[in-house]
Amino acid sequence: MYKIFVIGLVGFMLVSCNKSKSVEIVETYENGEIKIRKTTKNTKENIYLYEELYQSGQVKIIGEMKDDKRFGEWRAYHENGNVWSVGEYVEGKRQGFSEVFFPGGVINMSGYYKDDRPDSLWVIYDNLGDTSQVTLYRNNEIVKSYNKSTMAPLK
Image (cartoon, rainbow, N blue to C red; front, side):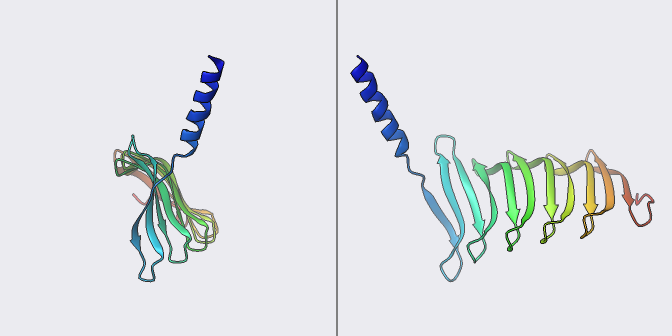
């Protein structure tokens, strides 16, 4: 009985380790370099990794798709490799905290999304990372917005 268990376990491990991920080249640049590719992660749940690349091969956008809708964390990168933006998706819609950065790596803006629309507090920064504007959203409407230079409400 023990031998059958061990043989079965080894066989299962070999089959599991040999699962290959399929890579689909969706689009290429004129020079033949890959522009967009999809790597299957889970065929049963229709989950794949989406990658959009610069012509240099550097990753531009990366994240997971389920049933052709974005989900989980998505990242975008400037061509110099620095993070451009980071945000969460649920069933194809932006949801939760999001950040955008200048090419040099300094934060440009941060805030929250609800159902793909700005919600709650949003902060915009200047190219030095200092706060330049603060806006409060509720139900897809601006409640208050303040500008650093005047410290007066914009609305």
